[in-house]
Length: 186
Image (tube, rainbow, N blue to C red):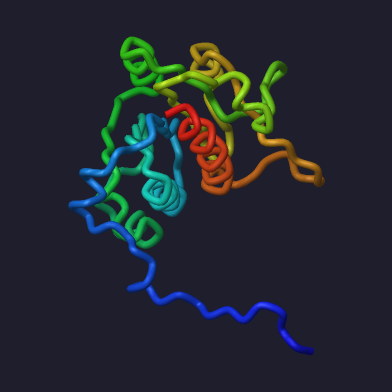
């Protein structure tokens, strides 16, 4: 069988990736991620790596979420803990309150009685210049007290037998969708 489109895998040197100093100077999308008591260091590292890929401005590690530097976080972050700005907060509630005071629209990624489909995210974040997304614990999700503080919940439509996705996978899906909306408003 003859291939219609001959392709060759790109070498790392051909990908025009930013150096760390260039990344620090690059314009970021006005998206902050709030990690509400994640427990897996691998998930934390994966969130960092995804945030780097999409030029996310900041990650807020809250409460008991593991912090860099950490060997297990580094294993999946692959250096993104050095490129993406981050901070630690004693509680997720304090972090959310602080972001709201700074003018951020804060949403959580959670299944709720009134959650909005990620497919329609552009309808409710259109013209937003500062957005924060709260990601919840791998077992219990986003804490109800934090959900109550958020403007709305965003839900990723799912069609199979499972009712949830891994938090790092959910983060990647949500960041891609949010970044498309935020970049189109710049």
